[in-house]
Structures are given as C-alpha cells and as structure tokens.
Length: 572
Image (cartoon, rainbow, N blue to C red; front, side):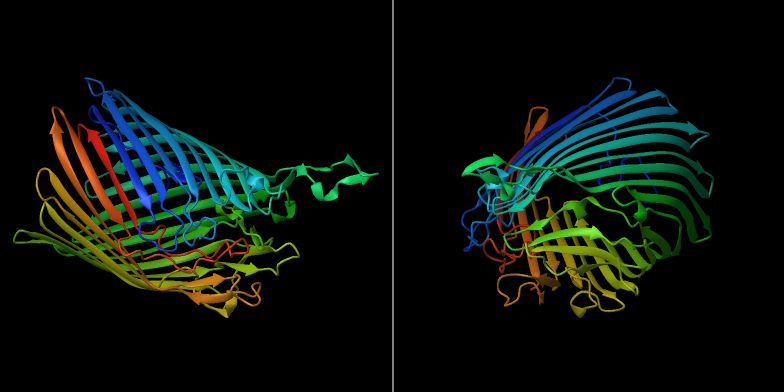
C-alpha cells in the first residue's frame, strides 16, 4: 500500500464506506469453546453483540453511519492445570462516519472510533492481578479520529487532503507468584497527515502524494511497595520502601514520505510504475545513543499482459523496509512461575530491507454456465539484515531477554500458491487455495537452525457457499496449516533453560454454518448456527502448571466451538 488516512502507525487500519441509503442491522452471537475436548476443565462461553446503522439525507448530500460491537469471553483451560490457554476478553467498540457533499465536486468525511478492551490470562480470575499465581493482563483504550477532504477536478481527477490521529493508553500486568513489581503503563500517540492528487487520462493514471507521520511511545514499569526490603526494628515495622516508576522505553518515530505511481497501457500491456521515498528518524530518550535515521527509496513495477481476454500474465518487483524501532508487541512479556521473557532491540539494530519478485497467470472465463477462475503465482523475497532473536541465559529470577538483532547474512522467502474459484451459479460458489513456501535464513540462527519458527511450509484453505433457497443457506470452510518448528523451554526438559526445537503436527481446521432467513414486513430476520474446528484439530501438548513455558503455543486459535445467533436488519 502507498498511504491512507486510516492507516495509523500500522496499529489499526479500518476501511470505512460512505452510507448510500438508510439501513440498520443488529446481531447477537453466542458460542461454547472446547466442545468435546477431553482434557479441558470446562467449556468457555463467548458472547458478542453488534449493530450498525446509516442515515442519508433526502438529497444524498449528507450521511452518517454508526457501528458498535461488544464481546465477552471467558478464559479457557485446555489441559485442566488451572491456567488458561485462551484469555478472558471484554471488548466494547463504538464508531461513526459522517460525510457531507458541498457540491458534486467537494466532499468532507470524518471518522471516529473508540476501542476499550480487557484481556487476562493465567489463573485466579476472581482475585486482583497481583494475587494470582500467574497473570498476563492488558487493558487497552484506543481512540482514533480522521478527517478527509476530497475535491474533483476535470472529469475524474481527485485531490485529497487528510489528517488522522490515534491515542492508545495501555495498562498491563505480567507477573507470577503474587508479585507487586510487574505493573506497567504504555502511552502511544500517533498521527498521519498527507496530500494526494490522482490524475486520470485516456489511457493512463498518475498518482502523486506526500505524507508525514509520527508516533510517541512511552512505556514505564510502575512503582510498588518493596516488601522484600522491609526495615524491621524490635519486631515492629519501621519502613516499607517504595520503588519509583522505571522508564522502559521513550521512543519517537517521525517519517516523511513522497510517493508517485503512473499507470499506462500500450496495446495488450498495462504498466504500473511507482516509488516511495521515506525519511525516518527513530529516537529513544532512554538511550540517546540509539537514535537512528535513514532515507529509503522503495520502487515498484508491475506489468500485465493480456494473452487472451480471459487470460492475463503479471510480473512485479517491489522493495520495502522495516525501521529498527520498538513495536507494541515487543512490550508483551511472556510470564510463568519459572520464566519471564522480555523483548528488546539491540543498540546496533539496523533497518531490514526486502526485495520481492512475483509472477502470476490469471485465468477467468465462463464455461457454459460455470464461472471459473484460476490463479497460479510464484513469489521470491530476499531480506537483507533480517530481524532475528538472540536468547540470553536466564538470570536467578528466571528472566530471559530476547534481543532483536540483524542476522549476519540475509534470508529468503520463496514459493508458489494456487487459487481456484468455481461458481456453477450465483447460488453455489467454491473457492480454494494452497501455498507451498520455504522461509530460510542464509545462515543458522537460533538453535543452529535456518528455518523461520512458527512458519509452516504448506498451508491452504477451502470455502464452500450454497444458497439453497431464498430462506436457507449453507457454508463450510477448511483451513490447513502444515508442520512448523516451535521452540520449547518447559518442564519436560531436564534443563529447561537450554530448550529444544519441536516440530508440530499439521492442523485441519474445518467449520460449517447454516442459516435461515425470513422476511418480517420491511426487514429480515436471520437465524444461524455453526461449528468451528469440527475435528478438534488443536494443540494437545500445552505445557503444564505454574512452571510452564508461557510461549509454547501454536496452531489454531481455539478448539471445537459451537455457536448460534441471529441478525435483524433491512439489508440482509
């Protein structure tokens, strides 16, 4: 992607549409997680409620849409050891989009949404966090606003200017064995503002733009009463020392970019040539010596050749990069009674660069009454200075530092994928795809291994949708995940600190859903029920107990789950 007003620091990217008519919809969904999983303590309840509505003025010049979402999920203990594998979740999201057309050539759009979410894993969920044996908990408050103005020139040229901002407040606790010292708080303020101009010609299109974005992230470890250092005199407490807040990260990232893209056609060829020039500056007040800046040119080119009306060939080349900055996921701390994993960047970390090549053949044709689409695609990506992890030895408290470094040599991700879509009619559609790939460092890194961890070499999907009648519909899905390498530092090892590399089994995550829709005057009511992960294709070797390896989790997100619900609205 080039840029956009809804892309804020890579954290949330909601693509919203202008309402075009008056509409409303309300839905309720309830599920039971862990149906038939013999080792589980009990099933987990997962409830969700959502709504959306839109209002459009009689002259269609103004409109507003509102949407909301609520979800509540209990923790799930897959192996009955008293500690959760799936955390509790409580989420409330509310948002709106408002637009107004000043004329046929001017439009102003405002977006806003807020997310409040609590997640907690571990045990003793009815106790305060520091009274649990293990607790990993985060509370997010996210507020995002965006404003976009568009003006049309000539027939189809569009000038747009946009600004957006996002504020995140994150309270966290990653602790074990009733620790008071593991509370934290993160504040992240980010913005993006830019200008774009899209010019349309007879056989060509030109896009020009500039964007400036930035973020300020501050993470602190909160102070606490140090009960281990109580000063006692004559059997009476004299003083309980109080530890001050500790700064973990205080980072700012400012990026300014120029971009352009030109598309034109010559006979059966269509060319798309573009480039993005970014200048970034990353600084961390915690360590002034780690300030990093860089200027990166990221070109791209795409060529399409129309062999036949129903058959196109494409080749493309593009470059990209990742700046050496702290990301939100780096602040997550994996915790158990014996092990606590903290992520940090090396002071010598350099930007990661990528160069990608893609070639594909795309077939789309109607054979009789059957619509057939087939895509075969090959891809090759070379990474320079790829990010990798270096493990430290555990200290006396079990704390392990995962330091993000640059592998001395590069890495290569390559493979091919096949996609097939068959639609005998508008009521019957089958889509399937399969990917075979390899993801390898050019030299051994962790565990003297070159393969990327938790990255399967094979994966695929299949979706089947059948509209049986005006009232009944049926759908099914299958997601295949191949074997992958997963590090393990758990209690089954004689020396857990040394760890071992395990190969997971393949997973076949299948699901079905059936729905019934009936008209109620000017609206429709839809009742539905379904089953996720029918075969219970789920990790079956979770680590056990308070000394568990907190990072040993892989595969499908949840075991067999039965769900049911309803939707009510005028545009179902």
